[in-house]
Length: 204
Image (cartoon, rainbow, N blue to C red; front, side, top):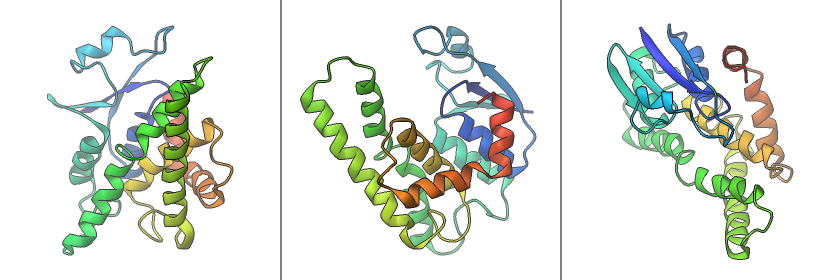
């Protein structure tokens, strides 16, 4: 059976969410962070980096959220309800761009802003850079959502799971106020039954 190693209070809840959307059968191994907010050493038994999410599918171990998402979609989504469209290579490339965007361009400034929020004295150069980059990324997504309910159009797809993570992170950092489309998008996605099940199973 497929097992997901989940670190509590982290992005792997979104892998749980994807599994719930796909109706997959899986086992959940939950880990708690230590007093420093780090993953416990036991997680290195699942993967040498000791990071999460990590899946173990009958001995096949895979890390990295984007790679895991693609693997799960190929395994559990043959009709491509959440996956990339068939046939059109440009449409597939655009879908992939948005799937990877949340792990790349969008995430780094959010992480920088999060780390700066924990510092009593913020280095001005880093603070100005992070502030500008967060505004750039959130403005980009807000514009994308100006004429659509979801990242790829009118239907919820896998890139929306990662984008919800970015939106939630921005919300926790107090950065979501100027972006009403993104705020509504976050609220709408968190109301999905599969998200609610994932939240309940992982304890938030």
